Length: 127
Image 1 (cartoon, rainbow, N blue to C red):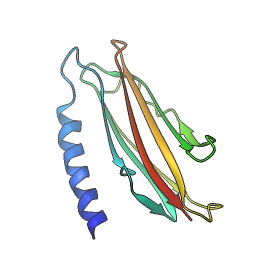
Image 2 (cartoon, one colour; image 1 turned 90 degrees about the vertical axis):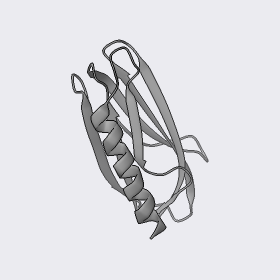
Image 3 (cartoon, helix red, strand yellow; image 1 turned 60 degrees about the vertical axis):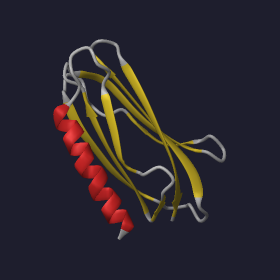
Image 4 (tube, rainbow, N blue to C red; image 1 turned 180 degrees about the horizontal axis):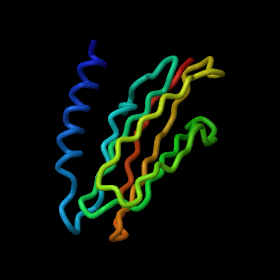
């Protein structure tokens, strides 16, 4: 129940920020709705990220690494070029993870003015 409440709150705040975007000359915006910092995700990893910039986005990158050994668990470069707002959603089944594994998700975004933003979330996954 707490997860649903936190998720809905984050989703609502994300929507408000997403639709208000950045003003001209400001850095791009990233809102990571899921995973939540410090959260345990079991069975599947849900990734939900909002990217926005009033002048247009140029690049975005998501990378998840295993904090135990530094290996890359997942990476993607969402198509955001020339968009002012993009919602990225991905569901990854968690197989072959018998023990709780600490992960770090790094999200980078850049706009047409060569301004960049980096967000990092740490969480744990388990099958």
